[in-house]
Length: 104
Image (cartoon, rainbow, N blue to C red; front, side, top):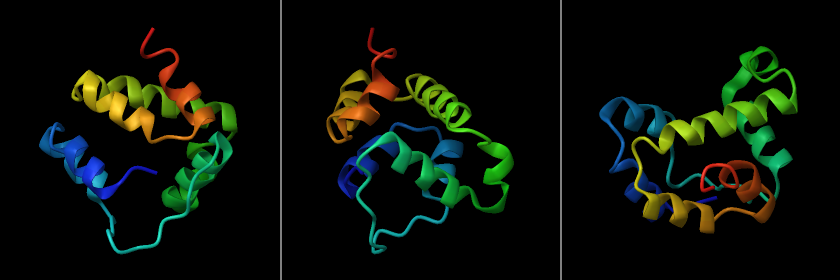
């Protein structure tokens, strides 16, 4: 989704506890699937969540609400410029879910 360089710029602005969450299980060398839509992003989140994803993300609507809420919280820690850089690297439909309401 976003490049390694962009990820490093992003987490540089995080407090330590968010850095740890972001990089937990992260592998720069691992091949990443290209996410093209909201459904693919939700599927990725569910796969990373493991067995508890059935309960954590019962429906796509709940998953979308969690994604949106996560980005709202990130706005507390990340500059507008960095958020715009991230937005520019996302597929169009995913940009709409995450950023249409945040940058209004």
